[in-house]
Length: 418
Image (tube, rainbow, N blue to C red; front, side, top):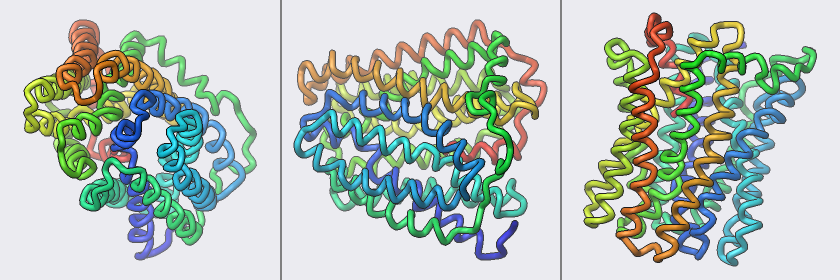
């Protein structure tokens, strides 16, 4: 089912718009909430997103796989998401935290399945996915970066207006999705299996002590990751940095650059030291934020943002590849689904909750302008990353996985994570 020469630009546009929606507000939602008296719920906002990440793939994944075409589901959930995004700002202005969190949960229920939907539409409608899919998927990263730059230039980094801009683009993408190539359900007519839906078979991988250590480390490392995702924009706002949304796109640019370097490092280091480098980058990023806040030295903070690609690619993207190798062909799909549940679901829930407690007991207590308290806040996730790095250094030694180094093809497939 291949659609000819025009399919690449059509799918690239889909990816660009989908990630533009998220890039317009997600990176700065912490700053937006803190500027409107809702700084105490920033961690909770990311936690409810974690709960949604656990629920939505099960429900919508089952529906899409068996009953409806992917492009139609993508269109519907983007239209619903547009309505949710458009109504969020009024509850930020009014300080209605409970309703905002409910809307955040509803939106993330809609958005989380778009990762697999956009990938599925692409994979089913192009030939030679190894070569062409990265070109399509990188347009998503470009969309995220473009949104951040535009919001920063317009001066909406700390404004709920940025959320409504995302809503408007989501509505446009919703209608555009119905024009995409027909992508029928792959599992139509197949019996519904609870083992597949809940990834039951993949849990057998946890019997392997190294894989169990990797999963536990992944969940714990989401605490410093969630701290960055939730509060980096708030810190930049406190330091009076202009165009916060634009500045944060440094992180997305670094994702692309470090991903291109990954094949070189894989051939020399293997999984253990790739993981340790990624974990150590989380520790260093938080230390740079801590020292930068204490000394009001913005270049240190910018250097921390530039480490985002190293943090994400060397640990989390490597983790997707590691999981695929441990699972093998028979349970590859289930294993990746389980990993998403532990990362974007359980990890984000715990990370958002813990970082929220840390913020509310350090920065919020003294007020967001207290830079000494900001310095204290970033020390905690840094020490958490240090502990995880030491555990991996002394206890992770899965040489069996290193016997087969990551190939260019596998790295291309994992570009979906950017």
